[in-house]
Length: 173
Image (cartoon, rainbow, N blue to C red; front, side, top):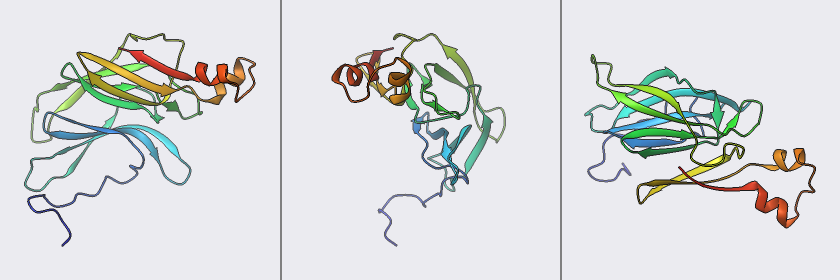
């Protein structure tokens, strides 16, 4: 009742998965890291769901190679899944980029991901939290903010226009 005609049954998110990004890739919905629980713990777990399955079930792929994070960006680009930046468990913005290729399913458990850290296309000295990647024209356009922690470290006064500009990130990867 209340479901859209033609849509399959609603599948609840896996336990402990709150506020995490995801992407559709090769017929599966993939979820990455994020924040969960009242304490706001960061994670690096990966989950997937076969969206075409008659009875879809979440698959736990365990922990990824990248550190636990929240507020990170996720994109599909050049037939790989990407994770960009975010904020680590200590609250520091991250400046890394990870890409995963999908390995074929070896059994009924489904496919696996092979993660590798990638060199950044934008300046590595600009970590970003709340990263938002957009794929267009054969490039990844990455928007995000570094947060007030970096402006404070640089000895600047919060709220000044130059500080606001410094905290904005816009990079091509």
